[in-house]
Amino acid sequence: MKSPTFGDKLARGSFVCTADLLPPRGPAAPRLDPAIVAGLRRLGCAVNVADMPSAVLAQAPLAGALQLLAAGIEPILQVTGRDRNRLALQADLLAAHALGVRNLLCLTGDHPAFGDHPAARPVFDLSATGILAAVAALNDGRSLEGRPLEGSTTFVAGAALNPGQLPLEPQLARAVAKERAGAAFFQTQPLFTPDAAARALAAAAEAGLTAPVLVGTFLLESPAMARYMSERVPGVTIPDAVVESLEAAADPRAYGRDLAREVVTWVREAPRGAAADGTASADTGAAGPIRPPQPAGVHVMSLNRLPEVIELLDGASDSG
Image (cartoon, rainbow, N blue to C red; front, side):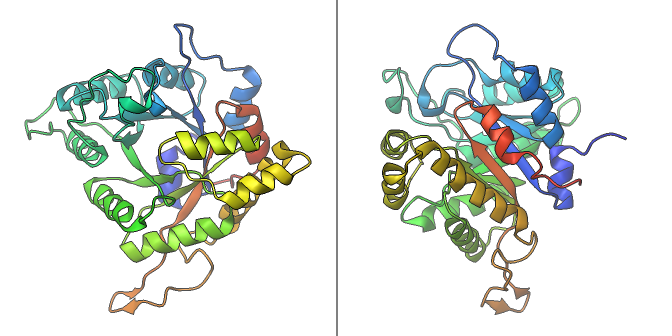
């Protein structure tokens, strides 16, 4: 029997886990150890392949996505609008589909000013919402300009959600626009406690978001790592209390692992399709109670420490 795909699991409400792969900053192919491949396949874990996060030069993500496909692991290809106009983006998407890629994460992309080529000219012809609209058009067998194509794509496209951005309302408004443009799922930036995850889902529900959400978390190793991410990585906010606890911990790496484990356990046990805390929202309009979007699973970020991700997630996914 064919294993359910990432899209199948989202549709069924099964627990979904995803990890991330940062492509190398050189010409060699990403190294996938057989033990890592076996662990990811056992978990049914899809893997995001990043598109130059923080605008730092690295291999284009399609190479890593194809390597994952060859290993029997579903990639989630990141697509950003930073470097390509709408014509090039659609061409790349058609090529990726022809090569077997079916899952996308559509992002606007970090500005080159944040990266190692600050003089690079940004494109930003399409935002994440615009890329999602282009994907929806391709899935409908037409270009973004409405011209018919020779066939349709079958992408499952998602988007990012950053609950740590303040004020939160503009971020949530953009997320709702992304869903209307075609986002079938969301992955959040890292969250470090179940309470933060519950608040994020509740706020998303209040804003009208209904798509399933993969709650992001991160395997922190040290106070220095936490401070660097919070100060230098766009979109990432790490609470002061977490940094202080890392500083006080006898084993900061173990503490970071425990934080991530608590988030994974909470998401796994949260009633998917119901309120995150098991109760309905207080807003009971004519359409019935508004409930948070489905906590579909977790997205564990690790800076390519995939063995640790597998250790964290092993056994977390359900049989569906």
